[in-house]
Image (cartoon, rainbow, N blue to C red; front, side):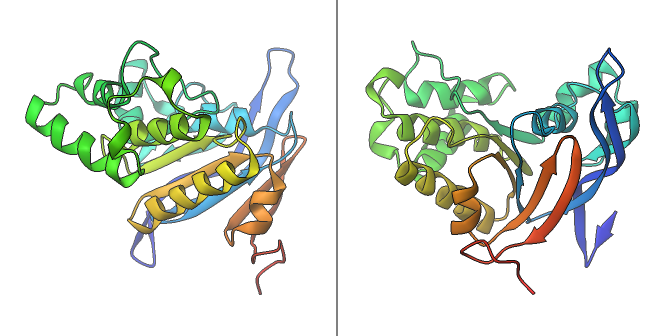
Length: 237
């Protein structure tokens, strides 16, 4: 599916997902994200943000409606095909999830080795993404030797290293102070400008006010706003 010659990377169509109790985590959610977009998904705890991530990564299937990610119909995705979907994604977590006994370079390279990349390809690509995130001089450092902001940059480099078409950042600034948070979103904006589609899940409304991006606001499982905001949080006309 394309719009204005751009592929649709994410499509939620009337999506609902229920708990075993029968209560819905999200319901009636519809939106699309095109290649090259930058999207914030925001809302308070319990709004349904985590459920949406699980649907995007193929961890769960929708109870209602349809979810399509990078051309993969999540509703019909067989377990053996889930890794194929995830290879098209780069996921960044709030808690970094770095391997403490590996250097920054080794953490990033590990993501390529898992997919069978060769030594020369790994060396070139890792060097490139580490320079992109501003940590070329920290490649030999271990996670415990890095600040929280630097660890998150390594995590972003790891998400980028296999050249995914979609970056999903789950509360990437949750453990960082405001200045480091702004730097991480600026880095993700730079990555977006280089061509990657970026989705950031956050509850930090200050980020929304500072950066002029499209925002989807979730409240108690429902999508209640889908707007492009100007810096300062005003709705763009």
